[in-house]
Length: 113
Length: 115
Image (cartoon, rainbow over the protein chains, first blue to last red):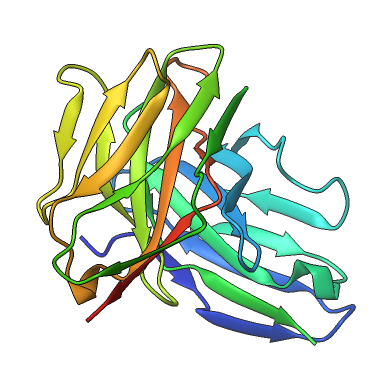
């Protein structure tokens, strides 16, 4: 079992470019969560998805950010027109269902220059 | 809504000394409780969790945490730390219902074990 796979591990983007972060959940997991960790801070919830559905996006910034979890393929977190303040570590986690916590990936560290 | 407070942002301790990392939470509903550990430039690893049953939970590497409902606390302890325990530790809660698994994290405590 390969665990939760995130890629790329490191991503550098210039201001105004788009960033695409990918997350492949653990085998058998149909629930995916995205969290953001700003420097020297804890993780903040962004969005919760199940296959083809966004369940809760209460933590997502209203503009420039979007997420999807298609029927086939990985979950994608997309950030359009990145700004310096988007620089952070973005973690994905997956679970098989409700309750009990979940497994995190190793994260994607986005640097906006 | 839930909130988690980790009172100490940094805890320096000498090797083989005991340590306690404090965590308090507030919630209007019953919660599950978790401790995660993050080593430098890595993701979070689940250290231990309380879902139900015995209020004292243990991890395989000597850490333990006790759920105290009256004090709304879930402090993490280890009787004798090693250099390899140096890491960031995060306390987290999620609601004990079917509304989703979203975790609310504390700000983290950096454990620094000195030789």
